[in-house]
Image 1 (cartoon, helix red, strand yellow):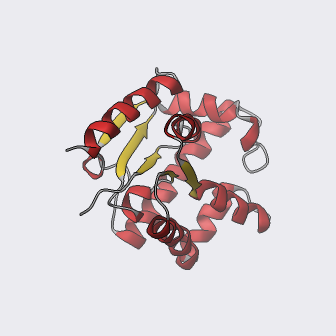
Image 2 (cartoon, one colour):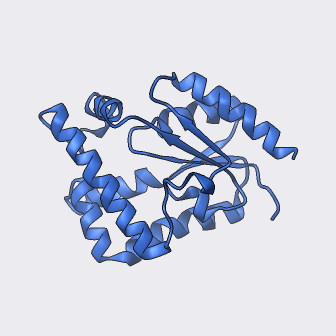
Image 3 (cartoon, one colour):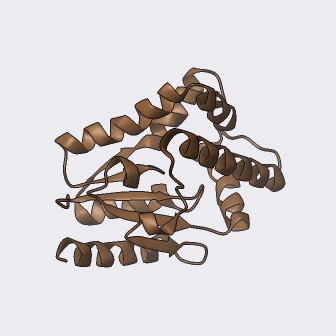
Amino acid sequence: MEKKHIISLGGELASGKGTVSKILMERLNFGIYKNGDYFRKLAKDMGMDVTTFNIYVKEHPEIDRQIEQSASEYAKEHDKFIIDARLGWYAVPESFKVYLKVDIDIAAKRAFGDELRKDSENFKTLEEQKQDLQKRYQLENERYWQLYNVRKEDESNYDLVIDTSFLTPEQVADKIEEEYKKWLFK
């Protein structure tokens, strides 16, 4: 399989995918493709929060397939970009595949303090945020297994796995950039 100048950045909820992808985009002069933005827009357009929409999508798999197919189609016509998507590695197997992990308590704190999430995830307490992240993680796992027969957290799917719990986004981007350049020339 021919390698493409594409980094697929997947990972757990609030693991830093969005922030790290922006840093890499600037450093590498790459574009960006974000499945999550599309997913959130669909949820908002339907008047649902993201967790409710996750449940809805489980009953309407054509939506999920449409979202994942959009990344694959984009990759056919574009190069030098980052896919910020949980199944980007699956949709574009010729990409450099990265998975970001994070401790659930740290993820909950990050998500709870993220003002950009408030229009689709608005919780009153940190514990509510944590429970929602755990529920969404489970819903996604069930849906991805049912639709694609894959486990997004299976580390063998990736070229690089990083635990972001105690790293800055810049440190994570440094490691990805370093390993990506090695991967290109293997």
